[in-house]
Length: 285
Image 1 (spheres, rainbow, N blue to C red):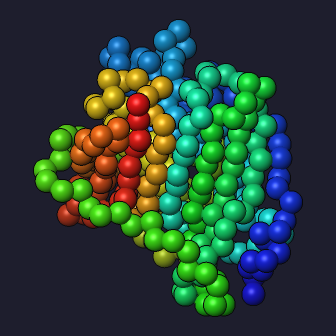
Image 2: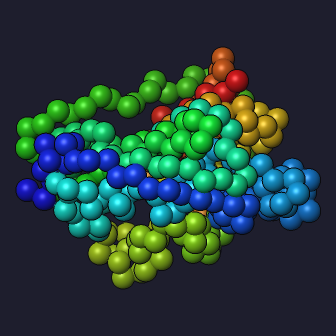
């Protein structure tokens, strides 16, 4: 079997130094759709170096050479075909605000492997700290189709009860035709998001948008509309990738306020509100 769960879980963590600067932050923000309108003071907080703050979801790409999804798929005990891999979910815990530039140590490991029958789910954990202590913890849930069925633990359910009542806010965000090409410059070079032939091999009619691009776009909508534009209020952010987005589509983002939290549901407008992100929650101060 290409996945040896015992070997993968016992593997030594991979540790490396990562660095980022203002240009990396600005490129990431542009990659998730910031800067429209270009002269809007609220958008300049994402694009102009003299006013720059860091959207917490930048943690998913900071120091693109750090241990991550692609690196994790080459860990001992894991040997899989990228065409069978789908990003199933993502969770992020912020220990303090992310600085505009920095150097830190990233430690990556496979924290869990679950047997879902027709697929295996790998939980890839990356913990990042600098000289002042922990910065953030990222967990990526990766589905590998066709690799389940060995009788392992199915793992906990990540499904949440759906929000009740009408949303407090509904926003729409258009996705540019070249959005995936721009976003991938932040370090995710999976050809699924750029190469039409590879996308067809993976079962898609054309290249799809990175799930983490939708993830960042959604967090920006939450911060801008319900958190007064204050990125430092975000404490954690988790989602389940429920469907794909094709570049050129429009995201419909429904938001519900809670006590210290915001629930979100994201869909693709042009495909009859097909679900894109589900079980999505932002916890905040």
